Length: 235
Image 1: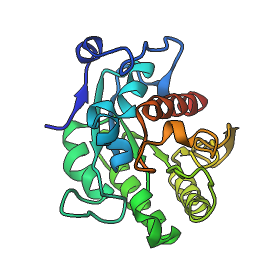
Image 2 (image 1 turned 180 degrees about the vertical axis):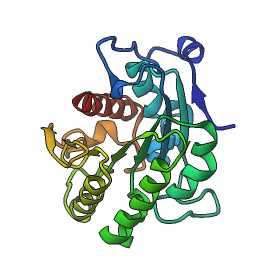
Image 3 (image 1 turned 90 degrees about the vertical axis):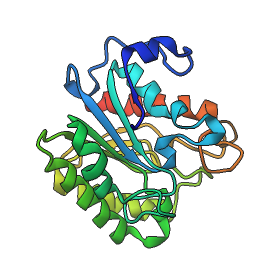
Image 4 (image 1 turned 90 degrees about the horizontal axis):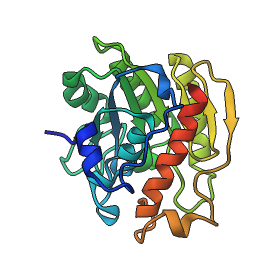
């Protein structure tokens, strides 16, 4: 069974992993959502920061007060294709793993592993994943996030890929959160926040771990905070 979080599990965990929920948060407006996160190892949680149990999604969920959360991130995968036989692409992950739990919110996150395949192919793959999610019987709210540049430079290929994703999200009426710039876009493509890049040359040594790609322990908490702030803009 895939990892999920409940109030009891959160209470039993350390405060670092389960920070106090913010009572003022709307977190996308559902009182008792079932939330599924689709992504790669940047979402799943990497061994250098403690594995899946350390992923930023648990801290974010605690901040939002979400009690029913499913981690459908899988390392070495991406929106386009599986790698090493570990998992399917994002669209198939939605069908095979998210669909059976009937989510009411679906986050589709990160294109890191597919960067070399180009903006058009990545955008088309996200389009298929969004379509698959929106076609579920629960008609979940979908939120798409880009990925960060672990070097903090935030130019090519991230810039071009994000532009293509923004177009797809606007067509699909899906909000888009852009870690490269800190921009948050509504479902109709309007920028409602410009909070600055999540990763910069100044903070990367703290929030990116020793492998130069995945989040550090501090980075997981940082990602949760930045995602929480972005989601708050959409509420």
